[in-house]
Image 1 (tube, rainbow, N blue to C red):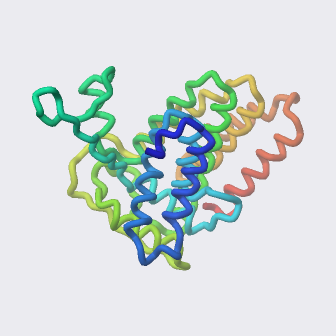
Image 2: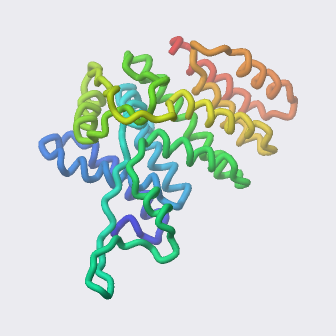
Image 3: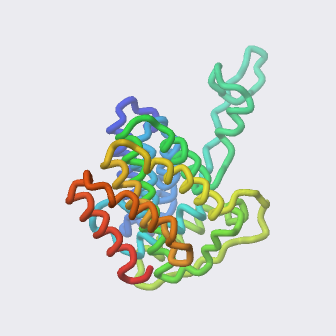
Length: 288
């Protein structure tokens, strides 16, 4: 019931509450409670408000405040690429004949209802919705979406820097384990311990066409088009997102060309140029 609060800020606070409880070490002896709040957090990724959605993604990625640890960031990327969103079954109601049937909103078609309630990988849900956000005409939405991509890049870099070698971005997203409880428990150990626990993926599941690298490529194609936005603050955040999503194994030519083209404009404020340079330094100082 609490998912249907009309107050957007209340749902944002609910996101943070779910994240805090699901990561609380004091509840290590009650994994059932942590799992329940983790489930609500994932369901909030479907919230109609972009603000609630963005906050939920940041929490999944381990970006909750300014004191996040590298291990939690690495666990965040692993969580995003491995966890499955499982929605509870819709309650049943009885029709006039006394037969039980699913409670579906009157205007919703059967296909849409089935699609909405179907379990799906978090990475696929998040990437598709971010793509939609980048097609918005709202500058605040574009800026917030670019910030989420930047934080995604930070978590991804942390995961590879800490040696999560079994993150195969070329693997189909539907081949990973759908056992959310076991994955969550391993991720909690990973994010709360000094070492890194490597969790193997399961490769004998149901196949699919979507891969992590494919979803990333599709998203980044949309992100790059946003560089044409008239708002310099949006463009700055987009460049920072591109920097953090850049992999050391990829060619730097396109990123170099984009940055060189943008920085050649004398109208850029010095503070934003400095911000971009600091982002470049932070991203590549340790060759992550």
